[in-house]
Image: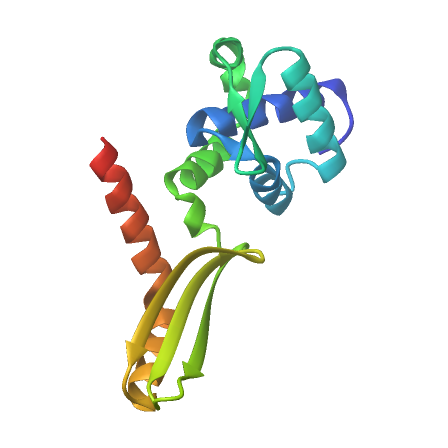
Length: 176
């Protein structure tokens, strides 16, 4: 996007729309989405967040050493007045993104597996879900043979993200 004032306004509306539809997000989660879709560059994103927070349209909280951004009531009211300025195609992309859970972001999510043979000849298979270099989830299996360990490894690499998504979805459903 170019540098005219209407683009500045549009970019801020895009950020508000993302946060309203997705809920709270970290700066890196916002950056992943807006940079991937080339809505704005990282430095502009940073400036817009500061301006939106200063104007009371966004707020931030610190959770687990991460700063999460939330749209405020004032931000929702502002967005309701001006959201039609966001092109329909952009709103549709954002809504599609909002329907995905955080663990569905293919650019940052990944799977790892480590195999370790114990002194008694058994195998320990440790399966991980990671976001960048952080392990989000770990599942450990103790099996008797190398074949069992290899099978678990293959299955985890094929189905691990689906299993993780389903687990998180089911755990969140229990809270409702």
